[in-house]
Length: 113
Length: 111
Image (cartoon, rainbow over all chains, first blue to last red; front, side, top):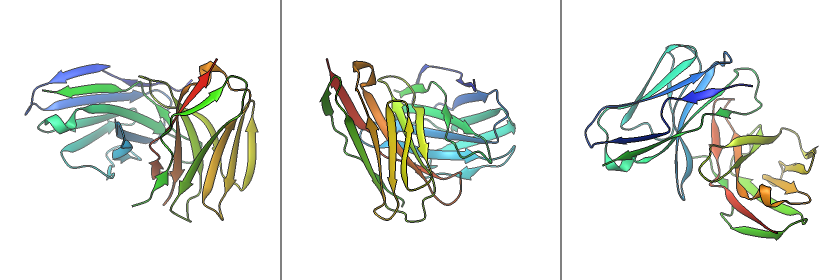
């Protein structure tokens, strides 16, 4: 089974802190994604990457950056956390040529106080 | 902005009934369509995908696609309380990397 592992299940950070969310997948998937999920708004794409060192902005990239130095790891960075970034963050991965859907990590619930 | 519309529910059905979940999408060029199930407090898990017009069956689940009407649905036969979850419709466009999700329909199966 493909596993997508997110480093933290719950995280509480202070306003202005730099926050790192880590995601690792173990099945050699090319594509990796970061979403946030909020009640009433659904899943919204922040950034995605289809190869090492490659990244593309999603629908809501403002206030976020990403890093993909290794194929299996995709990091989301909140440069200066704000309260409106309190959310559930979901990482997902998929194969480049196999359009059969995503495998999601278990999610990180981030609270910014 | 590509849109995927779902009724947020809740949709309540009695145990053993057929649950019908619906989704419409705005982009006529959309290529692939997915249904994910998300239990409360958990991450989404893929349950079905469909590419071609018509029906696709997998156990108690049937996905239906009508590209002319830009409509995709999920039928759950013999609904069980364990099917109670939020069901997310997802649609690809502009290549495999681009996916838009609906807000999800909450399904409640009443014993």
